[in-house]
Length: 429
Image (tube, rainbow, N blue to C red):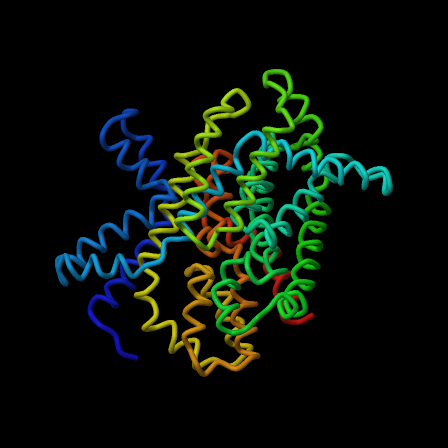
């Protein structure tokens, strides 16, 4: 295992960033010891924002990079990186968080939920949650995982009104795991599958046969277990989507069908061109113009939150290339079972798309090893915020539900059961 000085430093700084994520709650508490809006309060508050962690450490690392290798080498390294995903998530989060898109999603979910309630006579709140946590994540296989995460998280946010800490951690853990595996019905939506599908010739038939139906069953079981375990608490903590509509209807102008159709058109355009940065950014800029014209039917665009999520992912990408020196040899020397277990564990500290990309660079992987790598990567996608790129978007939307910031260890513990379900269906079943 050979490495350069800058690769070793890249791994060290990446490790420091990972450790920093486990301290954000404590840092936010420290910020309250200083006068509000004072210099130290603002600095500690910034350091306590989990979305900013990797961007901060990536910036420090690049200063070290420039000091050791010079400005020209740093620019060459920057231009070699692919930041399509952060830009895409920025655009898709802004569009999917608009009132017309969320209203259309609620109407669709309510239609399905109402039908189920009539057939099975199930409680409205639990039925709404059941449909949201199944259809939302599985739609990620078609509208992409970031879009599915954004819409699903906003719908959950609108339904929750007095949740406990235990419930919100269980809910966000199921959301993260379901979205990670819910995008595995097609070869173009889940980042860890997208990274390898073309190189390994995995088409739609291969994905749905080997991953899709297993993932769909796991999403169903995870959601059912959550509702069964927290049945009473969810009834007390949530309101139905119909009640959400009634609450919002009073102070908002009714959205014309034409405005909704235009928004859906822009969403479809960004999704279809999602792998072509110049194309979807052009569509997004045009959308911003349309949003200003339809301001009467809009809430404030979530530009700041979307930008923070993009910075988070950009920081992870900044470190990605410097992990190849230890990850690639590690993956190459594992048996299929060990590779699957290793992928689940490594995903918790390494974005699963980066993990499968590095695995695709190992030429000696067998077909069974390729499956083990990708299955483990998507199964472990809910263990931490950094495990799957869309997780940061979901947390950004639900972050106010975590006073003092999310505790990574609590998330890890809460995600163990839904992750075990995903492991069962993707490996044992």
